[in-house]
Amino acid sequence: MNSLEIDVCDFKSVGVTTLDVLPPLAVNSIRVKIEKFAISANNITYVALGKSMHYNEFFPTRTPNQTCTLPVWGVATVTASTHHLVQPGVRIYGYFPAASLYDFEPSIVTKTTIKVSRSHLPPDRAAYNAYEICTTDPLYTPRTENAMLLFRPLWFTSYLLTDYFQYHNYFDSTVIVVSSASSKTSFCFAQLISKAATASPPHNSRSIKVIGLTSKRNVSWTQSLGVYSTVIAYQDISAKGLLNKHENTQIVFVDVAGDPRVKKAVIEAVGGPLNVRKVIGVGISHFSPLDSSLPAIPPAASAAAAGGAPTLAASGSNKKLRDDDQKIDSEFFFAPEWVKKRLAQVGPQETFKGVQEGWTSLMENADKFISIKEFHGLNEAKRIYLEMLGGKASPDVGYIVSLEGGKAKI
Image (tube, rainbow, N blue to C red; front, side):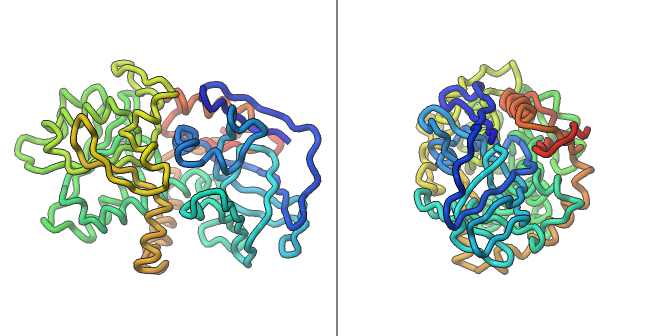
């Protein structure tokens, strides 16, 4: 068994470890062979928040105080089973370690889902504990498998964040600024929020303006997506500004990058904290800013520096905070907690009423957004992870890692 392991004190230190002798499969358990998975900026967030958000506890290594696995969303096939309801050959989609094999004990098995109980984790992590059986999964098709691996967790975060905005009446703002605009989470959100606002405008009946922030090298491509009102490079925020002279509104800043220097530039560009209605942290895709014009953030400090969100989010709650220096209403959006609240309020039918239409549309048009490339083996996964970590990965490429035999498919 091979796995990708990362030093919890130095995220750039990563290696492929090998376990030569597999332990016997436990009673009522299954062993799956992980076939392929996606790597994106989302995985960087899992690593950055590994301790505070418990991501390191899903797949503990033999040295949990020193290393963690890279969590990924992938597909796997059951190769061995001591559980009477699960037969070898069943193919599932879900949350796995970046490894060749994974053993777990199902707690619930239905015709559509295999669930595992992880009682040591907060209950709002339940979304990570469900493995969908591919043959009955309404969002799975063999033709769109790679696109699904890339977009599914990110698109659902965007979908739920859009619902969060609608629930709060867009926070009485008509201007939304989104960092890490070239990331899949960001541009899916931009597309969904614009469509939602058009279909059901906020109280003032004006359309939503979504401004994307990205690195200078990604500006043209991000603008070509057609989902942002405008796209601005990080180092041009101050020069170009974010509001027109005649715009009298407070912005909402959706912070996917988790970079305090970008946040500071945004606040200054709109004229100070009084013109910021809210800051909503969604991820930490930047361990250091993508542009050399902004000073780098040491990896060990970046998570703690990102608006205070990781520390306050440790309990799994969307807790409000006040930035000591800016006095801005801020919080960290955690999709599993929000969906739990919405399910309790309105039930699954209302919560997910737009999923099938939105997901089908995305899958039909995914190749217009990105070029999917498939690479082979955990050493390639290591290389791609380090590119993501350093902000060097191409935003127009969707990275799939296959652990099956074969060469890279470009």
